[in-house]
Image 1: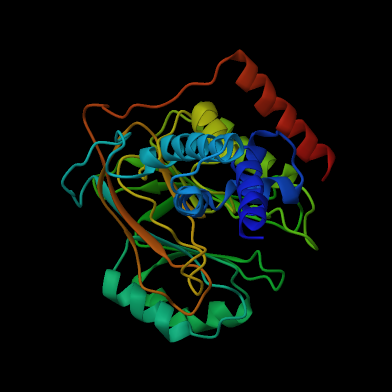
Image 2: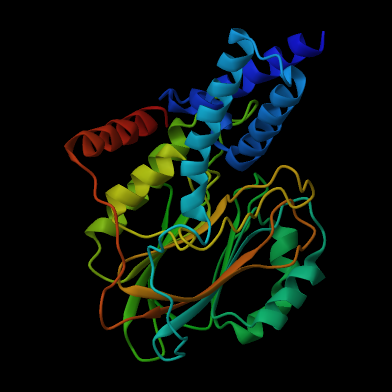
Length: 351
């Protein structure tokens, strides 16, 4: 009975390891993208259980299971290591300079969370230049109103469909666009901000819909919105940031395709996972909230902040325009560009 259970669990986690390689948009496929580190830990545990179970009497069958699980663990380790300090940094670490820098705070507040004062206290404690909050309704707009005196530039789109946006800035908003890239009920922002030294940067602030049962059975719309913004940021010659809850993990195929299409960089690579979800379930955490940087920036700091009662932790970052571009970005080949174009077309057709 014990060996049968081991075989069942082993078969499932071998399947779970490689199933994300299937390029289907169904939520029940894409959900396997998320718990990569958790799968690695469980597979290593299964290897240990197999070794203990067979002890000095290994069989051909048990050896096949052990070798298969070890292969899975090697594969997953290769996928996890880039998001640890053992991996190579995409973005150079630089000291923070206020004149050429920007300090951001990004968070999904969870619309039904009423701990407005926790969010206000975090803003006062961290004192960022720019704040981007998602899942904000009218109650959240009113709950955050006390910070507006310190943030003269605001864009407020409170909605009760969990896709409301609040954007507060100490830096001047020179140009703004409120876009509905895929869905007429899901807004996003495209903004030009003026840094303290007068240089202009562009910020794309988004919150695409997640692939979950009951809301979106496929990841098509999410992937399309992420890739549309990726193309926009690539075509934009200004220093650029893409921020928000992307409802996708840092190591997914879609996020990697976004990095190649946009030629932006992920500050997590070479530094850590910086998990932001799920704030209330420690065993199931992964990085869903992101700040991507164009090659014009260096990174001064990045931090997952204390919880504000949401199912997401806020994340903050200090980035600085650098004189010399040292960021290493990925580039899309012809096949990947075609795939991105097809994903965008499918997302627009489903609108």
